[in-house]
Image 1 (cartoon, each protein chain N blue to C red):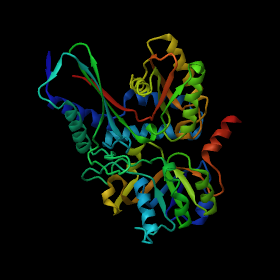
Image 2: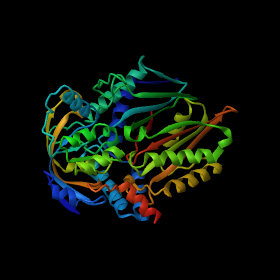
Image 3: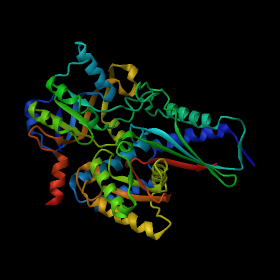
Length: 280
Length: 181
């Protein structure tokens, strides 16, 4: 067994929250820089240039990359051999969010109730997903998701007969309908299989798989490439201004499902892609 | 690049065309979802709006908190379509422009033409860049709304693109036509 101090958890989440909102991931700025070389529309190029300038200003002058510092989503991979020095693991994750959003001057965007809508004032509660894994490792993945892209994401229960073609047209329709709203250039997390509550989690896991990574199976790698090309043929372009670059990557994660179901979830991620992970 | 100054004159508005890259200087007001709801509550109760809307521009934006010594935090646009149901009435009251991101409803687009107004988009997600072009920020009303409070902002060459002009053109439609050509 391995003991982890809850104070360490708090400090870690605080640090990840601040870092993810201020410093653009290098993999993302490199992607945007490459996109600038293939973009053909003038307004599209103008937007991509401004995004690179924004990333520089954010890091150099210490201003959050985007004002929507989002809802805090924390994915935890918790080893079965890990124990904590005191009770209150979820409270510790929330305390980390509270401190990070306060010390980092990040926007508090959470309301206490979906209809009565009073701001909680500290961006808690975070949305936490815990997965038990073998061994004594503890991995914390922190994601800040704005509402612009979250609101454009969708889940649909397809018929098995609709297959890959059905999935593809659902993705294309979702991206087309979203248009400029989710702040393209976007990344697509596509979940296929599982069931109604599992499929969006597959899509989110896929989203945070790592920029530049490929699916472990060629069968799906080819599908990721095919979809990326078709999305970019829609011509939405950076911020919907038209052009070749609408999406930078498509990531798929699949899971077994019922003989009568084909669940699909499309999670659209904006260019800010606030995400950090660490193993404690 | 076209430089424009607040207040917007009719001549300026008529000259702006969808797709124009613009830099705007002068006063605009920040307001998003809850702020608009407050405006409408005031109108409903026959109370005065907290600012004179005639000839003004509203920026759909809720900033991150300003650290000590800074004017404002990150200050990029939010999705405009969430304000679509409120906008035509505000245009009827004399609002001349909006800044946000994304498409507007057909009803808003028609109201923009009817009231000779303009809708600009700022670069979505570029909050740090936007912060650098704001020279002053003053709380006007609704501090209880936190990031959704009404602020008076002084813009300095704030980068925008005209999305819907007063003759009914729409940049997102134009972009699509351009692609199909």
